[in-house]
Length: 296
Image (cartoon, rainbow, N blue to C red; front, side, top):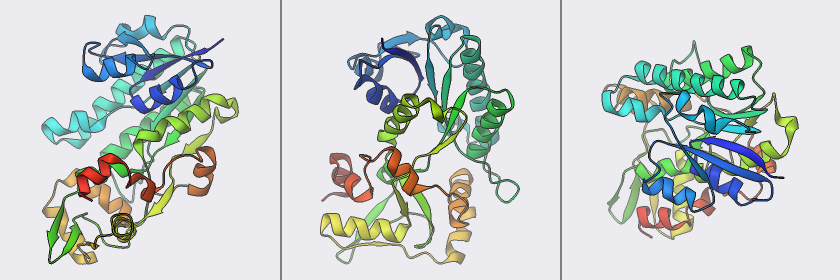
């Protein structure tokens, strides 16, 4: 008999689970069942539950009987309207703790939470610190969970500016060429989540999502190899990068700064073993979305 999984956001997770209808019965929380996004996941076989993270009572009934739940919260949804990172992190924390407590009340046996680590006191990043607070709360309260540590989304490149100059294409990623960071396609998050739900030994453990260890220089090289075009970065010096603190949105810059300092580390080989079919960067660069954005 399929186990019921309640998805608090994350179409990738819903999609991956519905690929195994003999194992999983998928329910998804949505504020608007009539939206195109909701209709798209409903078409996959997801049963929609109308509710809002602002109000745990709105989805409490739909959560009953769930074996597992996947929780992800969108910091940027709260941050973008006002540019207040601390306020956005607090909203995210309240919403997520509400979902966690609702899962506990409903007797959910395995909660998977999409999280990030805190780099305090070296670097304070509201986007990271808020998620780390939730992870700490879940551990302190003994919530049966897997903490899913995500990394740089390949999809972030689809909003990274680039320009043509002198027969070359310049990727305007605001980092030095050798800034190290792990990455993966957010569209494949469900591969790791599904693997965790399939193996109960993941309860109480951390799981990393990463298919490749990157740098901006490696990204430009991959673009050149996949497209057959000449790609370069801006070749920012350390000094030029550090000066960007006063020139671009601070919340974005402090995220880049943590990467610049080498703070984000993932066990990429172990992560690839969990989801061996997940794309590396070159494979992702051959998707229609990447080809359309970078024009090759």
